[in-house]
Image 1 (spheres, rainbow over the protein chains, first blue to last red):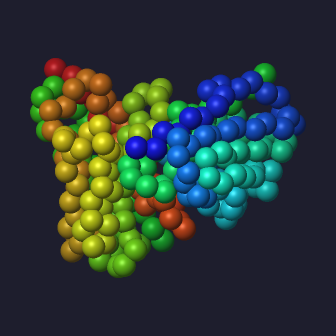
Image 2 (image 1 turned 120 degrees about the vertical axis):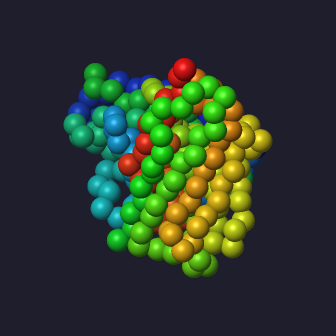
Amino acid sequence: DIQMTQSPSSLSASVGDRVTITCRASQGIRNDLGWYQQKPGKAPKRLIYAASSLQSGVPSRFSGSGSGTEFTLTISSLQPEDFATYYCLQHNSYPYSFGQGTKLEIK
Amino acid sequence: QVTLKESGPALVKPTQTLTLTCTFSGFSLSTSGMRVSWIRQPPGKALEWLARIDWDDDKFYSTSLKTRLTISKDTSKNQVVLTMTNMDPVDTATYYCARIGGADDYWGQGTLVTVSS
């Protein structure tokens, strides 16, 4: 099984900050990775697909990069609505696997 | 418009079998390339992918749970059913069905299942 190691597990930041979240795969997954945002009581919402493609309707301050085993999600300038939990998901091979999540909190 | 909705019991007892139904619209599971997954999330914890069924009836399961899971589809009813045997309190979670892992991404609202005697 492919393990997804996500870091950090939590992050305190201020509005306007630039933040980066990382996911590392235990083996190569090409670019078969998505990034999700989840707010309390809601289903996850995909922000990035194919590692670096912005989902339609998602603000351009979100970006993704990486291929193979290392991936990053960057938020260029945090907005109040961005404080949430973020997950990566690999769908290269079965079983699919999520990272353990990054809780982004207001400093 | 693609929608998915989970249904099933809110409370099950330990050792019982859980049966969840995902009823969807806006696509057909008889169409090539279509697939539906189940994902769960214990309260305050991370997402966990459970299983997937494809248009051609291929099925895939979580390694750690595969002995307890069965996924099936009823194409005529636009439904996917997940059964999980021998439920335990640690299986308390919100269970989601979703169409994920491809060009598009759709999730149900989730259903909370509590395992308690």
